[in-house]
Image (cartoon, rainbow, N blue to C red; front, side, top):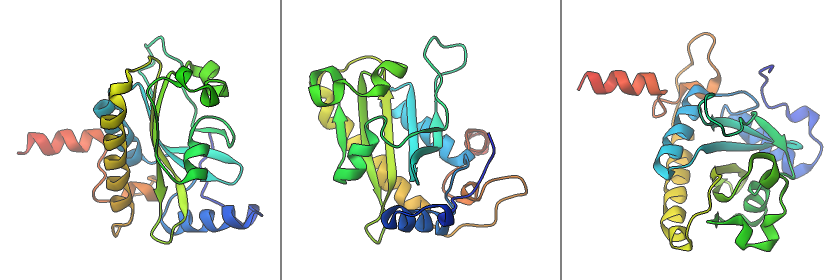
Length: 205
């Protein structure tokens, strides 16, 4: 996959154009960031879910700047970095500007027919909107799983996804240093460390 920055000049819809410009100002775009991947991995572990994403809405598609997927030895499907704008449940979260928790997507007829249900076998979803300081919805933070969960998981899962969403918003608005050569701009947040860096920190404590 070729890395590229968000290109506002190729977007015509006014709302999408404003979002793309704001993402570019924050150093976010259509390229993976090691630290956002680490954030997604931490979220997946906290939620006990096989998939987690930092999902940016850029033009006509969704782009997972932060992505955690099962190990390649797993029987579960792998997920690419991008997806059509109308697939999944994140578009609903962005449109409503509210979190969405689905312990069992089959229990909600409105959501059971989504394309990703068949694509990777999604049975549970939780996502929260990334709303910028000026009210722009940049995308979502979300987790998905392939096994249904009891309805009683709804409230704690909602609290978890909102906590991680708020944490990420705080982090992406922190002042950043210039990233080392070869790293994406998103890799310069001081509060987002990739797994290896966190392991090194623990050894030094």
